[in-house]
Image (cartoon, rainbow, N blue to C red; front, side):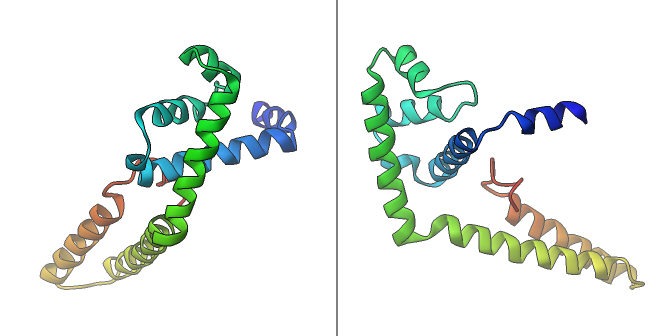
Amino acid sequence: MQNKAREKAHITPGHEKKIKRKEEIAELLEFYSGLLTNKELGVLELYIQPDYSGAEVARKLRISRQAVHDHIRRSLGRMRRCEAKLQLIANYKKNAAMFRKIIAKIDQCCGQPHTPEGQQTLEELKELFEKLVNRNTRNFSHEL
């Protein structure tokens, strides 16, 4: 418990902003990575790693820090523009929240007395909704 408090105490506002930016990039990559060149994708995949800074990415890929910055800025801009138009992430989050509510209601029904057939149907419904919610989710399950 004390270690977590120490970790939070060392997070500066600037560091928190970098963490949020990396989380945003990871989220956008889940949906829009196909829009990027291999070079842009490689830069972003390294950059979102917790232990990598822009300078470390530059060293690893043997490119300049400015090139890393340019790749990130261009890629992030392209993915943000696509999200603004397509709303894939926003719709995904809305749907997942709705499915979670449905699962909670099914759980309520499962706790009430039913016929064995009714109980089995509710269990099957719950499983189907859980599969639907969890399909194609990798990094977003903690947000939902």
